[in-house]
Amino acid sequence: MNSGVNNSRNYILPFLNHELFVIAELSGNHNQDFDLAIQMVEAAAQAGADAIKLQTYTAETMTLDLRQGEFVIQEKDSLWSGQSLYDLYGKASTPWQWHKALFDRARELGMLAFSSPFDSSAVDFLESLDVPCYKIASFENTDIPLLKKVAATGKPIILSTGMASLAEIDEAVSCLRQHGAGEIALLKCTSTYPAAATDTNLLTIPHMQQAFACPVGLSDHTQGIGAAIASVALGARIIEKHFVLDRSQGGVDAEFSIEPNELKSLIIESRRAIDALGQVTYGGTAKEEAAKRYRRSIYVAKPIKQGERFNEQNLRIVRPGLGLAPKYWEQVQGRVAAQDLEVGMPLDWTLLD
Image (tube, rainbow, N blue to C red):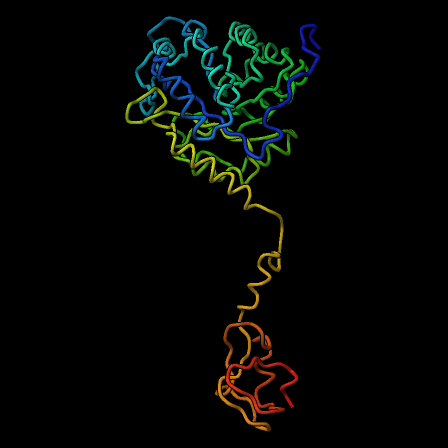
């Protein structure tokens, strides 16, 4: 274990005791407008988010200042096709001088606030702000030097799996554990923007939870909230979604980000989905017991004299369920009434001669 490891373990994974932990990712949707960024933090809190997350980098810490070849996004179907990596990261970055104010505002509103560092200098900076945990972005989960640096803080770490193979995830998790990381959580992630629902493969979530014995969740780049809600049925208890105040106003990630009303719906419906999971139950719940009286049963449908035979004309299977169960219908046909019977009487064995 590195000598720089924080062995105090003063930090507890902030979502282990949550049935659901929802992170609003601000990314670059603030469009370099500090007031807008503050409004996003406030809107996330009002919608019910548990945390806001930033991304801590500069264009210089991400790439080289080149505008040719592989330093330009070539994919035609990309939201950022034709842009240089340097220009894109410059436009999407969150100024470091904003971090403290954004974190402070989030905490004032009862949310956790943390970030994804993209290099060693970002970790040092975030440590100076005493962040409660770290997020490793999917494109950085193979950056072993970065993983070692973050692990050495001793703080909890959320790692997006993205394109990583099972072996690469294992290597990343092993690295984090060996170098002093606090609790670790894994997020299933599809690293396309936006991601198609058909590429999301939510069934990976329970497998990942079993394979690595840690909390799991979803870093969701699909449009809408359907995939995120579905994920909780498979064990996801951490959901991260990119957030924007108004998609129509743009933002680098606006196309696959959700607005405040959608974030609120996501939180409400995900919690409802978790509540609905319950446990394996047959025979109805205690609250359903009273409803059993409205099942069908056998009732007298016409006046019947003592000694008269029961038939399909003078008996019927109707609601409520206070008479003999319908499964006895054939057994009572042709039997004799033990007494005079009135319409509306539930049939029971004592009424048969």
